[in-house]
Length: 391
Image (tube, rainbow, N blue to C red; front, side):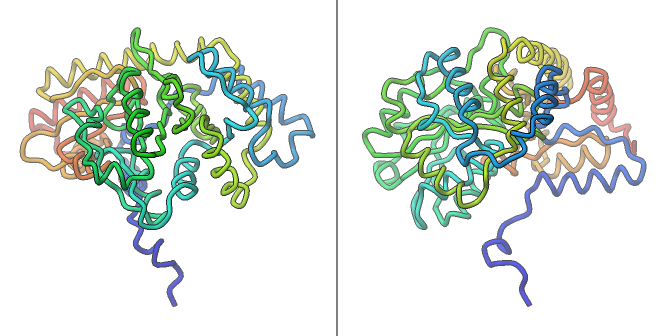
């Protein structure tokens, strides 16, 4: 008897989970694995957010079901964030929807928008969930042309692809490549959307995780963007709330309604106490976000400098907490990731996990302390000198 549908049976294993399993096997043998694979912040959720949750949990009014769209107070906090950060006005009742993390929102949005056979433009490489969502919805992916800096080349999209595409998924600051853009890129995206009737989304999970003076733009800043676009946001990275599973989507009210209709048949939004705590986070002065970013900057500077000295090719990012590193000659991305894990105990993510054009790179997440990064650097130096037999 077959216990899985054909769709699930043909779904490839999530590569991150495969590496996590290998990590457990090595740790069971006593290997000290340093995990630079998954993009999960190691920093704790700020105390003021935890305190807000504690207080909300004690209120029995928060023990009931949330409204399907999320609490109005939380959605108002999202709208206020957009007004203060980007000067964008949003109707919290119609143009904002609470999500159980942005990952589920993205997958559900794809199913809420496209029909089987519809085409979707996505970058290659890109966050694997985009391709998974397209597959589950029965759609067909089209590679979005990119330049060497992983910025979209909208003019290079063929007329046929532009006419046939129903949806385009953007992601800036970008995971995995760390690419960043200015608002002019979003202007071009909206112009394309208007000309070819394409729905545009921007996955802005890392919009507040930036370096130095760089400020990531919002697609909703573009005039008339709400006629064609929505933007996904998450508190996972900016407020170290990855396990809390709380995010949002904002923008076009019809797209929001389509997603809300689908989700109301699947879930009942997030626990109200978590929404209350997320509201407090979004209404804060963002001091903790700035402190986090300074920590990530120091980590980036340390590992970037060490990799340069060791002969690895990479660019210093302006956004995210990743490094996108070219693998040494003679290795595939999977081969190099396995080599590091097996012979140094350092876990990174192979670029092939993000699409065919991620081949030749690995993504390194700066989600360990400076002391642990010193140990990473020590192990890489030994590996480079061919002196590592085993950890």
